[in-house]
Length: 178
Image (tube, rainbow, N blue to C red; front, top):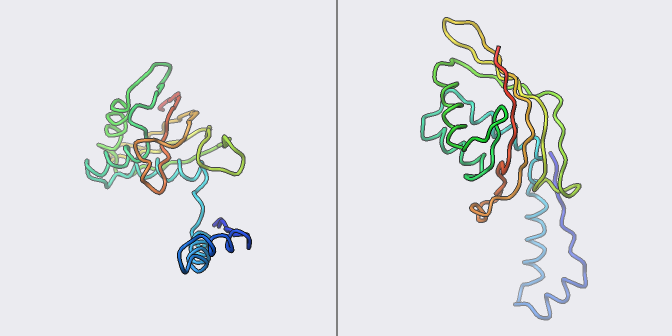
């Protein structure tokens, strides 16, 4: 687990004490301790993996599924699926169809790379790699889909008030099922 630590220069604390309200130094120190105890945002890769695993949870209700998609994809994200543009609603229908008759779904990520827009800042960037989607059915055998993806993650202005306002803002996928 990564932690970020805030260092407040003494000069800044003194300036806050002079121009700020009484208790400004204590407030600044308390805030810096709270900031230091709060873990930084997960990496783009971890964020993506967590959100996609949530979307492919077979035990969700329809409302929970829609909420998980909305927490993952920007509403107007340009998506390309097997060479053609698709809306987010197509993605919802596609994933929902895969969930419909599956008893379990496992996601495996391989050859994943992450490129942050600003090194050391996991707010925005690109994640690329391969996702293997293992779907288990009763009584049918397992089916496997391979998804080669390039996904751009960044802040979504519609969710500015959220602690983590990152969403998939563009995606290109080529999917083969066998």
